[in-house]
Image (tube, rainbow, N blue to C red):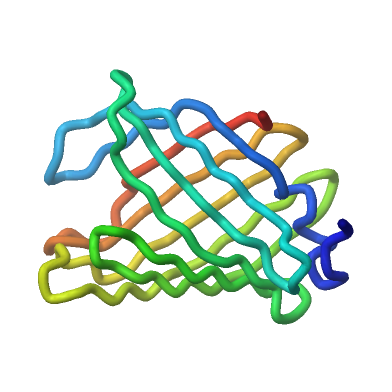
Length: 156
């Protein structure tokens, strides 16, 4: 199946990616994890996204799922749901050139009454060949926007 024409700039993201990650935040101890991201084309003008992380011991840590859209040239939208009681709506820019696909987004977060306070997020994805780098920052629990997660993933 060929992706919808609007997805051509990010079609190289389709697949499964896995590799090591590192987390830190002022309110927690630093930690290592393994991340797996699956990006799937289902024949619609968006891609389906699933992410899971596990500790070094293999214990599940986090998961999220959502949809990646390109509503206009150079514009990317990302909608996510998380079992922590958060939904995240991200918007930003897509840059493609020299074999590199880069997505840079800012997110607005809504949470349930029992979810921890997360005010905003920043997400960056950079695909260079078969290497996908992710960077995530957040403003949460009274801490201003601060780096939280980085991973270096390879195509499976």
